[in-house]
Image (tube, rainbow, N blue to C red; front, top):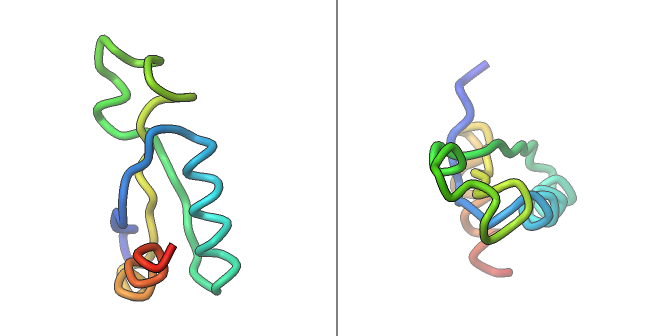
Length: 71
């Protein structure tokens, strides 16, 4: 299995869940995790859980980008 790649980043976990739900509804496996910026001194400001990156399989990257651009 290939290492997941980042499609985009969002301000917090609620936004990450919404985008992953959209991707999954269209057959794209998705996950999210905190970004390196979440470990900063400003963690917790500006969103729930800090900035998150949306991850997909490299083979799904283009389809995920196109889908998220439509939204």
